[in-house]
Length: 126
Image 1 (spheres, rainbow, N blue to C red):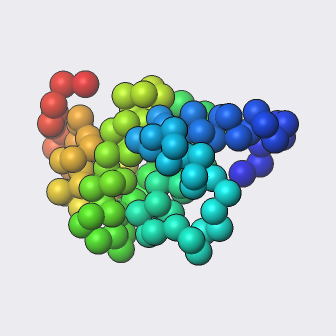
Image 2 (cartoon, helix red, strand yellow):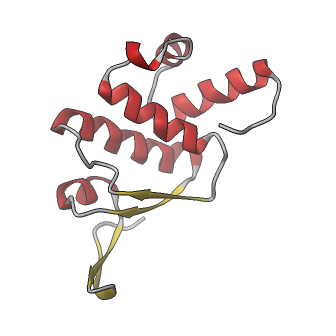
């Protein structure tokens, strides 16, 4: 993921980030050595999110993050995004046509048509 840090520090940081997105410490330690072929689809999606967050962005931009997800995976990813917001203080900008997902994770929504914002709304107070 492009970070040049000592292996043990990288491991500790990965566990911290995985816990920040909702893995227990035990689950985080268990998932780290696994090859991607050994992970469920939901675990893979959450690992991709963790890889993004390892770089400690102030804002993470997710473009159609639920593209081909089944409803169960979508709920796990939504929970991971909410956990990252709460536990790690990350701001997310999410571009999506999936309004159910948007309602699960977003505080504010801007509706767009033809590249212009047509409506803004608060779903809940941040």
